[in-house]
Length: 234
View 1 (tube, helix red, strand yellow):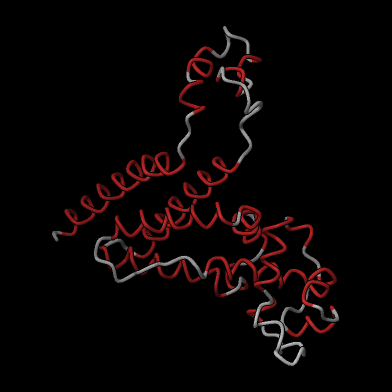
View 2 (cartoon, helix red, strand yellow; view 1 turned 60 degrees about the horizontal axis):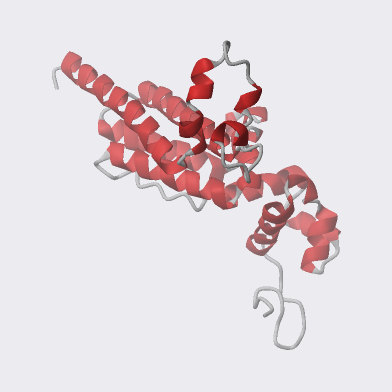
């Protein structure tokens, strides 16, 4: 069935909007990857002259930024939540689910911001930072400490997501886990622990692994906050 956003009852094309353009761009990236997204391809999918799309994104870089914003806008953050640890846990799991739904967008979220000065990044990509800083400051962290926490937190999250999304199965049809993961190729005397961990590596559960890592991280942060409160006499 045709989308009401793109076709009118009279058969005329509905007016474009930034939201419609970015939604179609995200569809292309989800289906075929970042390299498939060009103004020409996007115009073809929307049934429009590619030149008409430049009013919604001045170039391909702006289009990629818009796709990043569109995905991150789906991340629910509640900086007013008094339970900061539970809120950080929820954000982490929500971000993981977004990454699993849009794996082709993950490189945009992880590496693209590094090539752009903070103040020049799209506002939608900075809101999570502002909201999490607000959450941490309200919890009692000093602003500068909150920034350090944010960096450690997101560094852990993106590392986990990249690890979970990587292709780690050599032969999915193989029943023997050592062979399925290709660990049989490792010299047994040099890598005894890795080979012995084959069953645990084969049973990777992304949500459980994330929770275990978060517990370690959040426990350390809570201890830091307690020491800070003790020093200040609170």
